[in-house]
Structure formats: C-alpha cells, structure tokens
Length: 448
Ligand SMILES: Cc1ncc(COP(=O)(O)O)c(C=O)c1O
Image (cartoon, rainbow, N blue to C red; front, side, top):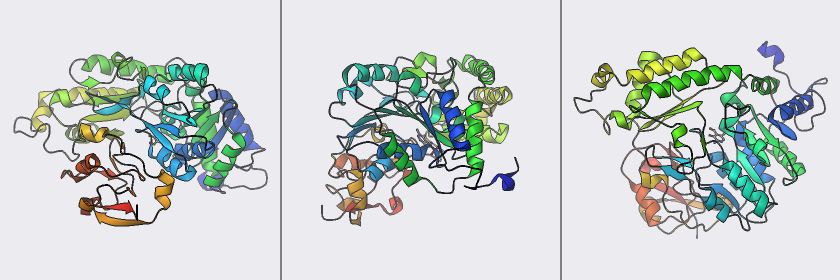
C-alpha cells in the first residue's frame, strides 16, 4: 500500500465516518453481511471505543450488569455514561489462577431491574462462557434486556472451527477487535448490532462523540480488508491441526487449557487458537520460560504472569509459527532447559521472577460496597492520603494488579480492610490505575 498516498481524510469522493453515504457505508454494509449483523460500525480507536459507545447508548433505567473481570474500557465506559453497576464475579480457575469462567445462573439471577448485561466472550485467554444459555434465558424471561458482548478477542468467530459468534447466538451487539486476530491495522475494530433493543440513534451519537473527526483512511481500508480476511477459513484449519499436535505432545507434562476444560468452572467452550500454558507442573515460573523461549526461539508471547503464558494465533500466523512454538514448548521439558533455568541450584518456582504471583485473594476479593458511581467518583474532588489513613474512605482510583487486571477496588467503592490488606502487601507488582503505588498513597474522594 502507498502509505502517504493513501493517508487521506474526508475529501470529496471519499466518505464521512460519522454520516457514511459512500465508500464507508458500502464497506460497513459488506462487513455487516460477513459478520451477520444488521448494521456494522468501523471503529478507529479499537474495541475500547465500541465498549464505551455501547454503554453511552443505554438508558438509565437500572444498573448495568458487568463482569468484575471486564476490560478497562468497560470501566471507563461506566465513567463516561454515569451508569450504576452491578458486578458479576468471574470464576477463578484453581489450576491457572485466572478468571476464566462465568456462572450463567449467577448472572441471570442479577438481571431483575438491570438496564443491560455486558459479557466478555471470549476472555483474553480463550475461554467462553455459556452465552447461548444466557441468551436463551434472556429471550424467555427478560425479553427486553439488551445483552452486549465484548467479543474483542473473537473477531474471527465465523464458521465451524470456532465457538459461535455472539450475534449468531442472538446478542444485541458485539464489539470486535479486528486488529487482534484478523488483518486490520492496530486500532481497527468494529461494532456490530442487530435488533430493536438498542437505541441506534444514540449509539451513533455516542460514536461521533468519542471518535475523531479525521479518521485515517489507512485504518478504514484495513478494516474493509479485515472483514474479508474473516472469510478465509482454510488457513485456520491448517493452524488447528498444528495446535492439536502441541496439545498431544505436551499432554500430561504441561497444563494447557483445552477442550477437556469445557463444561467446567463456568467455561462452556475453549477457543483453540489461544494457547494458554500453565508452567506450574514444570516447577519453573513463567517469566523464566518466556525468557528462554524468546532467547532460543525468538518466540514472543502475548502475555504472561507468574505461572501462565498466553500465545495467540491470528490471521497472520503460519503453520511454521505453530511448529516453532511446539518445538519451544517441548524444549521446556528437556533437561537442558531445566539445567539452564537453574532448577537444581534452587532458582525454581517462586524465585528469579520478575512478576510476582497475583495472590488468589487479589483475584477476587470480596466486592467492596459502592458509595458513588464510577462517574460520580471520577468528578469528585480528591485528595491524596497514605494508605494507612484511607480505611473507610471512598476510593478515587480504580486499582488492579496486572495481569490479569481485575480491580481490587473501583473508584467510588469503599476502601475496606480486605482491600487495604491487598494493597499493603509488600510484594512489588505491576498495578494498573494506582498512580502513587510506589509511595503507598492513594487518591480518596474528599469529604465523604
Ligand atoms: C476483553 C477486551 N476488550 C476490549 C479490549 C480493547 O481492545 P482495543 O485494544 O482494540 O481497544 C481489550 C484489549 O486488550 C480486551 O482484552
């Protein structure tokens, strides 16, 4: 592509993202056809802006039900929209120590009075909750309730190789991060909608409010191609066969999330194109394995924590990439690596780790009571206090240990003893959203 030559904006002969009537309208209509939507919107600020706009489109008739493990764009969407919120607790998988599941019964039980239900499907790690059961229950018992799906990591869900897409199951909206698994440029994403439950005019207004008035045609053109790339299925079949070899080769030696985990712990299906490896059975921490894979094989994972490594496949992955990954993972089982990792000299699990383990208690602490909505807290006057003086005050920050990024406290919630105990822990870790973590000081809402 001729980059400078294609870096156009809203010139005559082109189109307007916020009022499309020409080539953007055509490309969006084509994408809607491909993904089974009534209407599709191209997004130039990632799935992030899709989540935010969907929340803006909801009426204030009750709290929005969202998983506590939702992406931060859902939390920022709550600030923008001002909605009240009820959280569903994800199921933490005891072997991976990650929020992989969602109990549908718990979610359905919280629907009465809710304005909408927001679900992440799949999770970053490729686990899918039972969205089909949720939507069936919605149709039977709460037919007016919009069910909105953050399908950021499942833009490629077309055809029989993958779990069904959210729209095919009857969701009102699905946000795709097209740039993650399909062929769009980074930031390129799509929002797909169907049915009457969402106020589309308000949704369009929300998108206009949040997105640039100078969308990049490079990005938009890449989204058009990204939609087409979803139709290429043979390539995925080849990858799937290679991934099966990985599972076969590592069976019983490394713990991988796989089809055997389906129908357990709030997981209905597993997307094979995300390869989640738990290194605990090796007795070697994930960061040590990651370093080895990078140095020896040039393999760069998507994400890792203390004990898990996540590898993602996308439209650009090749069977050779998967074979290389297989060689890399198998070499973790060999004596040479164990020697190199210094297991014998005591540098095993729990030592030499750049990332400290996220304690199970941190993954899912008791939900603190909410005093203010996230928006009220955001716009309140705040002051910075030492953690030791913050008990009982209202948090002015949303703080999550990362990965996996589930908030210990969301702004507007009360800083309870349990929350403080987790924030006080001496371990150095990566905190998202905590500005003065190093000083152990926290923003609280003034005069509450
Ligand atoms: C579940 C989920 N939703 C939404 C997003 C935001 O996607 P984007 O980076 O396209 O804005 C992410 C990003 O990683 C995510 O993991």
